[in-house]
Length: 321
Image (cartoon, rainbow, N blue to C red):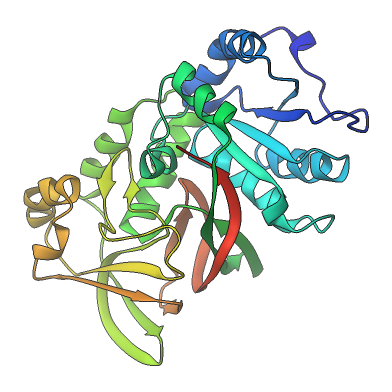
């Protein structure tokens, strides 16, 4: 990618109603880099006034979004995958210049899973996605604030779609290693889902949600604002993005062959039919474990237990069909 497409930082104060376009060139196995020139031309042809910036490292999109809002941008487009959108949303939610709901956030997907866009039926084609942005119809969606262990201290992050604890987090961690090497497609996640089965062990967890306590060995936990992850699996099939509740799917200790037999239930939304699965809704949930267990949120590995999840209703204004 030619560097003159971007500035590494935002240089000037916005005087017109311009869009800030935050592009992750590494998204989708560097699909962001390859597709950006064409996306840029489509935006220009549709009459968008915009300033593009390029992410240069993990978490860079957070600071770019914060800086953009501080300099006057109120319309932001994330060009990337679910992780890119997560970072931009965290920048919007953590800045204190204006209420986060005064920022309009849209997306053009060039990632691998694109599960947030799937939830809202945002077109995967660039022309369709840009048409949605131009129509600029918005709605408020919930987000979740999660705290977690991080190198002996406590970390905090918002997520806008779905978090996974245990098995799913291990799969994401291994998948992301391949992404860092430039290998990225929808089959990589499925490959590591299957291969991780042969060594992963369930963990004993204590779960407290709305004053009810659960204890036992759990294979996986999904906590969702949206219903999709892993490129279309419905691990929290009844999730609604603006109902003010977290949807939780608990999978108790389960054999690897039963997991494989249950895969079709993940894709058709009927995972609740498995007797080892419990699905419920809550406003908050706390999870502890011994030994510590991993967490991923919106496809990004974060930290380890203990965890606290808390719904933040109607916190983010998104541009969707």
